[in-house]
Image 1: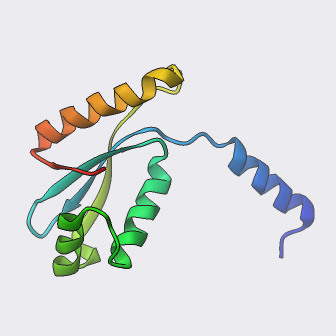
Image 2 (image 1 turned 60 degrees about the vertical axis):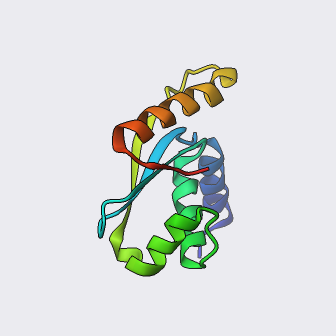
Length: 113
């Protein structure tokens, strides 16, 4: 069991960790289909996406259908691009939208909300 001080240190480090903002892809290796999304926290997004898919509750129905048909082993999560840490907060949404649109076209992918 962790000491009280160790636990506090771990919590402090987690709070100070910056989230990765950017664009990601979910790929089905069984058939090559790809879905692209954007997130203000790419690590949390993967966890949330896989959680919803495992529970059959992902809001993107085409992705959920492929997951159900092909199984978890056929899927990959990939970070496609990251925004610079020094980007102005007011520019994040527009930058993510542009980056996501570019990757959707480049990969001939479907959009994730």
